[in-house]
Length: 541
Image 1 (tube, rainbow, N blue to C red):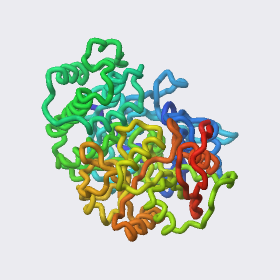
Image 2 (cartoon, rainbow, N blue to C red; image 1 turned 45 degrees about the horizontal axis):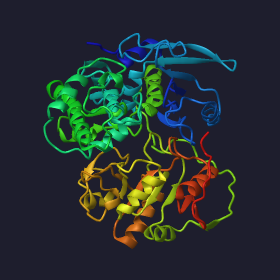
Image 3 (cartoon, one colour; image 1 turned 180 degrees about the vertical axis):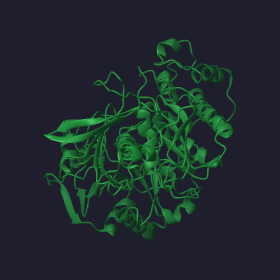
Image 4 (cartoon, rainbow, N blue to C red; image 1 turned 60 degrees about the vertical axis):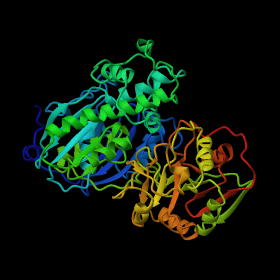
């Protein structure tokens, strides 16, 4: 049993310095730079390297570093670096561990000034990120689940922020989940990170029922295995090898393996997590909306919290929280999901554009005329889900709209399109009894009119919106409801295929013309394309 030293005891030994600014870096894929004002216990920003049309899962790049540094008016007091592979740039702490010795504290000289240096493991970045961002008051005991590509562990955090490792349920749960997609895809080689999201969609096509002999054999091989990496060629004799990802036999397998992974964790939790504390979920598996829904339905916990950046995009925030906990004794922050990069209004060619001041009624009329509209407001979202500041919006009523959106997105036809809904109306359209502002839960669709956002199994991944949360999107939904009777729209991310969110006007115009958007809104201006889409390359750096 590993117990993490009480942070309050550390502060009695070290003395407190609460007037402190922390800049934190997440190395490796999903590279991110976060800044936290420790004096206000508040997230200043979280800049993800893939945003602004860089490749998905990018490492930190010079553009992100310069933009992040430009937001601060002085050198930070603390530079924090999250752990990664111990062979990665001489990482001193590495990937795993929460006990004493899993962090490094020191000093560095930056531009002639002495600053504090802090580094802790990747595992800790997930744990303290979910704890720091959770809505539960300081001192509330919590359980924590970290499940992602490599970790599959439960923890308990007591009222003094002591952390107890309760046990490892499974090695590499996220990697095993994503591996299935590569196994079935004739075009796939090694396991790829995007495979997990695609498999989540395919599981919705699977039939209910107990595993058959083939399914059980693969489950028995896959789940207990500690092997990494798994090699597709080693399963050449499997009936699922290159079977095709949409084959019914494979979609059934996807559903059975998904259930088996969850059931393994649920069985452990039911036996060992018996105090009724709230559950914090982090790691890439925290983006699996079916599993999140099932955790809520277990009734094992007083509440369940999943941050919108549960995957590695939240790790820089987690390391910053860990550093703040070390230096100040506080591990709770205020934050806003729209804390990413501001939109860049560079010059665009207005040829072929009709330009209007933003009028919500005019945009609604375009949407009801089956037009597909890009929607940009304020800073971009943190985490991978578009939540109304870098979105593509459309009316939710037609299967043809679903098909068109997947063509625009250059995605497989089996991929679902998510809805965004007025929070006050969510129970009218979805079997959802709580707000879901970060689009992290599956629910059954109750409204048969919503054909564009209803998946094969009758579910959707809805985002709820309130006036306080996102005023502009709330106003658009309210106006759409006034004309259509339904406060729901299709909402998918605004990005070139294979890149992070579009974050500059010139890229948006290039994308609109090439992909086939009918128009777009940037802040308080509505642009409609006069001509049809043209073949244009660009926007990907």
